[in-house]
Amino acid sequence: MDAREIANQLTNRGASPECDVCGEGELQVIAESNYALPAQSERGPGVDPYHSLLVAAVVCANCGHVRLHATRALEP
Ligand SMILES: [Zn+2]
Image 1 (cartoon, helix red, strand yellow):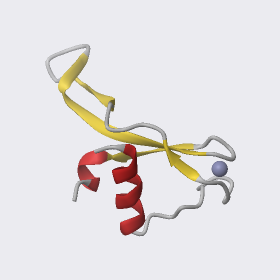
Image 2 (spheres, rainbow, N blue to C red):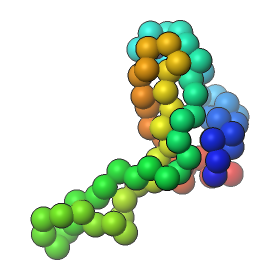
Image 3 (cartoon, protein in one colour):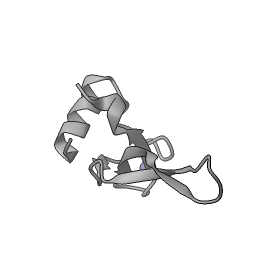
């Protein structure tokens, strides 16, 4: 899922185009699904790479606020 697809899915689902912090600005998808939030391993200290959450980062062009969306939830 590329940045354009992510932006289209957010628009189609009624996600607000306004920034949560400043109320203005143009939100831009700055990352495709190549970011992942690490999951804590259940076997001990460290990260479990197989259960990480793939996310898209969206940033406000005005204030720089960043929000994350799980890309799996945005798949058509
Ligand atoms: Zn903002």
